[in-house]
Amino acid sequence: MANSPKKRPDAAQPSAEVSDEMVAKVGAAVGQVAVIRKEYTQRVQSAGSDDEKEQLADQAEQAAVKAIDDQGISVSDYNRVVTAASDNPDLEERLLQAVRATH
Image 1: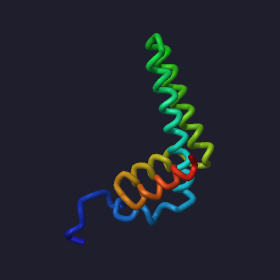
Image 2: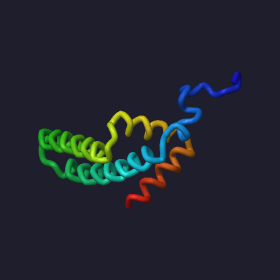
Image 3: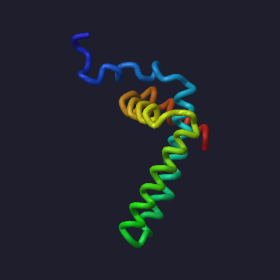
Image 4: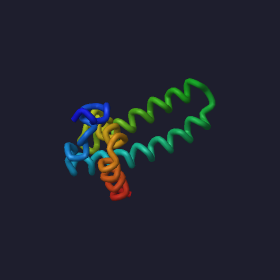
């Protein structure tokens, strides 16, 4: 244990701690959020005023939250799994497979 890397304590095995069901739900949400982000990025870029850009950004955030909620997970769970995947190659691969399975 003395030679363990100095990462977050939960970064050692997050893949094992995240159920297949949660990975599938987050994967589906990630795919939907990516589509929303792409759509709204284009709309914001073509918006005329700063107010319109701000409104579109708010709409994009609301749409992303709804996409996550529609999967039956919280934004907190979504963020936790996505963050854990960035620290864990096994979990990242499971999540990418879940994203691919929904598209």
